[in-house]
Length: 245
Image (cartoon, rainbow, N blue to C red):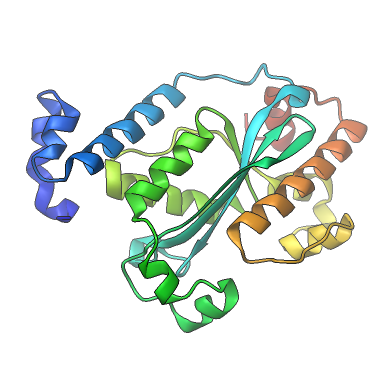
């Protein structure tokens, strides 16, 4: 696949009409269709306003990424994506998403050790455009939830821009921000700290699917606290409570 830097002319073609035909002139048809699909999903997502949705009926996806490092702008890449669906107060443990991602670069030894994702495993994994498209198809128009979401948002947006020249339009809620708002004296606590605080199991950490399941359980515990301490019933009221209107 050619690099985006060598494909600048395609954006002129795109602006003149026809996304898939334009992309197909330099990419294989399957990749062109995936790009078109991702762009369509992001366009549709921008139309949704879910502030009125009750938290008890909120449909969300809790997700986590494993990456080669912390700086996508310096060449770090996603190596796995994990996610679980959430329906109000229920974590749908039978509705899961998980994919390894081929980063097309060497995974540092300490990351291999931490995540158990080896270079050999990653070399056999789907490419970024395929894994990202499947993840977004799983998410659809649902709200995203993550712990320490800044890291995940940077990588998702870098991946979207690299593959499809779009940015994420999904609303993102962060369990770390919710927890810090409820317990300002505990700011700086890690995911492991919060799991321990709420008596939740942390076995299998640093696996994106397991971390997603743990974060989902943390989210449910936090929402119990929010409802017991604040008059927060809708997504909009939650954003107001968090100062993220």
